[in-house]
Image (cartoon, one colour):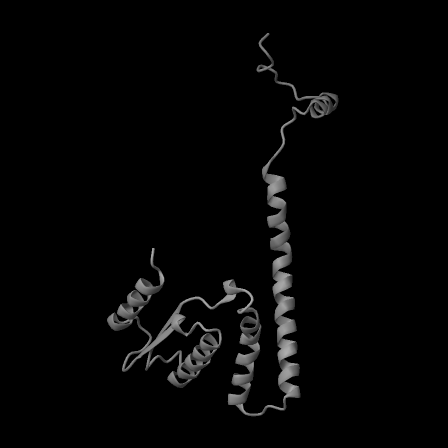
Length: 167
């Protein structure tokens, strides 16, 4: 008989136990390495929901206690709340500095009303400047253009990348 390659019977429980004791039993390396991923997939959705609910509650309480009724004030206060943690941490931790960010918009884009875009640009610009990173934010609004990436916009993007993505 050859060295066991021709066996057609299954190993007995005693034989399996003996093989495990010797350390020669087959083990899956995928299962232990996959457990953290399984745990992350199980926990992450719940964590995201809880964080969103906490943020919504905190923001509601803050805006309610600030007695804010003007929509412009709400936007301004919300922007400060969202950027304050980054601003506070940036001087101590340069890794939190805002990344290079080009913003292009078409004046006639129906999905992004131009007044809202301009307001957003101003908030972002001030935030970047407050973190001494104003050079990392550029914007371009093209007149008489809707929701498209025009040749002019594409040129601005390429120019931006040439400046910020040097090898």
